[in-house]
Length: 442
Image (cartoon, rainbow, N blue to C red):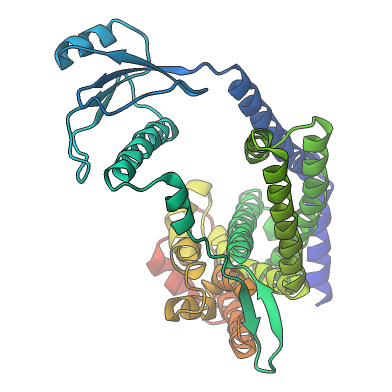
């Protein structure tokens, strides 16, 4: 155990004292807020200086009246479609909107001609203009005024309350939990993959530089592997903690310092400026109530438990996959040779990552989500993706026990390959060779 601890110290200090570690640890959490601030600033400036797009309109139905807006300036055309298209092609304008004679019950045949593929947002904006007019025409046809229609609309805000077996009630919000679990699952996937590959690279470097031949003369290969895995895990945890602290502080500071606002905030202010005092007061009251409810929901989320589970699965997943990456690194001489073994190792982790969005956050209590969170190779991502939605204690305990067992098993398998492969050089390695090394007795 003492030798493993010495190797852990060596791996930890060797990486922490490098300039590359200090640069990455400090710059990464600074770069992302800078990028976010830059993008938001350019979006705001671009929105301020943006000119309205010119849209030519050929309305053969005669039912539309187009009003210019900040986004579009409409030029009404007349004549044959072919001639209008020819005239449009001579300009640098955005689009030509063609509206044939149509039935209100089936408004088909409408088309937009452009010289290049437009953005989804602009297409959607034009569709909204047309849909709004057709909707008004239908109201006129059925003699329904806007006030009557507004009175028919009913908005339901379904309050979510979790009821425990003891009858205790807690506020909940699936949208907030969806975002939280998605973020945690992504972080697990990225860090397990990144630091696992770091182990593989470190083993390959030491093997090719012959340093390992000196080290294994005083420690067993298995002790060397364990020390390397735990040492790099310590570096990862330290770096991850620093990134969270710096990133959280700097992101809010940068946006606040430059007075930047997100596009949603800017849009909200524009809407508020167009309302009268009474309506604006109602909107502000509704927003204040929403903020209070949001903070109440955040207070009900068990962040301490989620943090513990995240750290456990971060370490468990890292140790499980780190052992496999170490085994691969010991078996090959170059990064290129390692690629043939890298994909099969990371495939279960990739399955868990893809299932996070396709299955887990959409149905966190379904059968597939359950099994993915129990199987050790996918549980680091899957269980973290479920935890905020509430997981029965027995499922969480079973998953943790199996993950520990999976780590012990993969470490045992990887150790048998590592003890032979770490001293082999120039051998053409395939799965048959790895199996042979695994079967060699001590």
